[in-house]
Image (cartoon, rainbow, N blue to C red; front, side, top):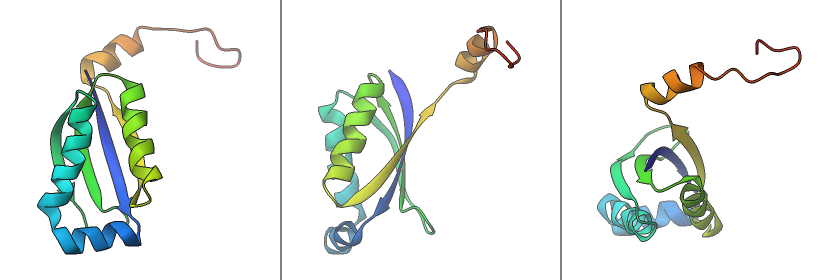
Amino acid sequence: MARFLVIATYQPQGARAVMAGGGTARRSVFEHAVLDLHGRLETFDFALGADDVYAIVDLPDAASAAALSLTISGGGVATVRTVVLLPPEELDRAAQLHPHYPGGQG
C-alpha cells in the first residue's frame, strides 16, 4: 500500500452538499470511494483557507490514487490535488540511487 495526501477544494455544488449533509456525511462518501479502491482512510479533516479538505489515504498504487482524484474532480463537487507521501525509509532508498543526467549531479 502507498500513502497519499488528498487535498480538495469544494466547488459551489460541493459546498452546498456539505452545508446540507454535514461534515460526517462528506467524510463517509469519501471513505466509501477509498474502500471501493481497496484502500483505507487514515485521516479526513476540514480546513479553513484556500483548501477545504486534507485527507490521508492508503491505496494499492498510484493508479488507484489517480482514479480517486479523477472521479471526484469529474463529479464537479471539488477539485483535487494528490500528493505521494514517502516514508523516511523510502527517501533513504532514493538517496542511494544515482541516475546519470547530463548537467546534473548524477
